[in-house]
Image (cartoon, rainbow, N blue to C red; front, side):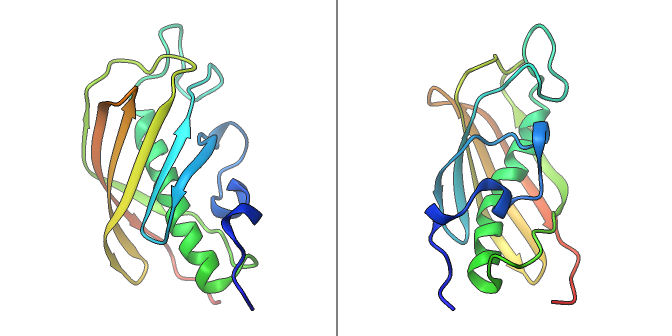
Length: 148
């Protein structure tokens, strides 16, 4: 069986999030260890208010960007029928340099697995608006094992 090409997949194939909790609009780059995504904050996002969206949501965006490359790796290894089970995310370090994310701005999010062992990952993440760094964080991801 040949693994599918990236153009044959949807975000729902890669991530367990659905509806308003799926924050990513587009995958710009992906391989088995790193991904770059694009999103635009919307008033329907969690925690949104009249000012925009608090930067805490960038943690979820970083986790979803990490989920894109780890989902791509899962599909390459186990196929599209494999369980897209989510990851439990721990925040090892997070720095924000913005008070609110304005609506409709383009946020580029980057995530790279810097450590992988079995079902544990440590991920370096950054987000930018118009080329300006707005956050940098290190996440720890853990996924329960399945019977596959």
